[in-house]
Length: 177
Image (cartoon, rainbow, N blue to C red; front, top):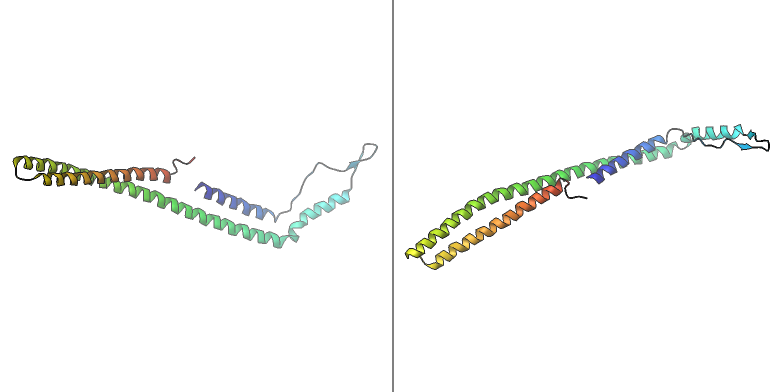
């Protein structure tokens, strides 16, 4: 997300730089002329005038190039804006998917808790029935196997809940150096 934001800022500044090419550029330097043997400065005002006129008129001669560069910069800025918008949508989808995964796992865990409690009661009841002689040990083993499967499902759903929290943390920008 940050990379797309920086690319958009770079494209914005490149467009402004292309716009600035339409304006004259005046460069100031520290050299004003040369000195003679007496220490006086000898300058050539004609060369200063030519340099000044050249820098003021140069954008007129480069107008076609400047316009093309501006159009390219505007297109690149538009492309960066669309890429930024797409990254923003992708980030929203990523957060939404992580939230859904976490919420679904939480609701499944609530159901799993109820199922485990009911199966623990069923195992205890089946055990008591076997002690009274109304059922055999195979039914107790079957009830225990069903309870074990239910507990394994609970563990899988708990893992999914934890993974959903981790995904949500990453989607919101956590854990990135």
